[in-house]
Length: 422
Image 1 (cartoon, rainbow, N blue to C red):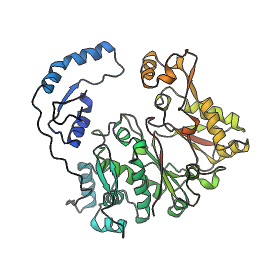
Image 2 (cartoon, helix red, strand yellow):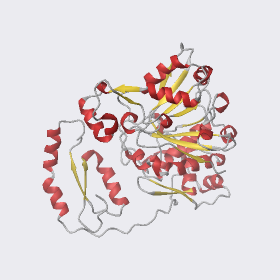
Image 3 (cartoon, one colour):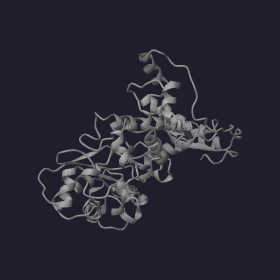
Image 4 (cartoon, one colour):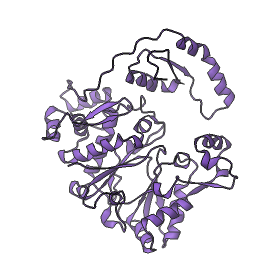
């Protein structure tokens, strides 16, 4: 309840999320706001225990709501970037950067004025690219360049990083939820168009793995911007239960040369000569191993079987799950005469979970969140992986080998594609 700045207000939560509650209070200029917590957790436990926890804090909540509220603190817009003194020794700088919550745990380069100036070139350092949740940090081009310098990026990478940041701030992406959820999601950055080849952004063998500088530094810079400008510090505002390795860097190009279909950017209305970035609030890749199937219909069984699981957020929150087809699997599907639209439709029809595979507790929860899919249906009915075939994101990437990947998402997020401004 952060709206009532002139009336008594209180934030309710569990004790495990105190840091996030305090950060939200400060963000809205309410450092005085009372925070009342119950012992974590309140989900997945007996409702009687939840009620007992609620009863424990009634007096504390009433006291907070009946006291005279303190005036809200003055709120000022973030300046975007500033200068601080840091150790000259590179090894000492690593320890210092971790203490400042600037680092992701891997070695970082000092963002010296000279290094940042080289990244910016003649660009307007003060240009505001986006305001980033959860703390409404001002992502100026200079602030983005500072984090790109930390990540080891080069000047030619900056337009891609800035475009990704701009896409992440689109309301459809739901960045605040992506930044603060316990779900392990993080932005997957997909690059399309001729710029990907010019910069060496890999869409070939091991594209989501190690060995590609452009992929690594672009994805890492985006993540550092979200941490250092957006304010999602791991264990504080970023509440991921486990996270995944893509939270260090998660970036690839579509392998357009190996795709039998139009690339994602063209599918979304951009001309073939345009270079774009697409961001997706994604889990880690789930491998699809199929070395035997020789037709699209047969391969569909492996793809759908990997996609349709009871633990997927997409089942009850919708969203834009991703299918990355290896070139050999894509060739098999196209060889059966299927278009990309046909693949999406067939996969959506096949990737379903029967209601009797969910626990009664989860069915009750999902019935509140998505009643149109879960209420009043028999146990042998099924629910699709996502709301519509059009919600599936399908790209081709990777090298030789009969592997593909299914990537579920946070669910309550939409993928966003923007033009890269060089």
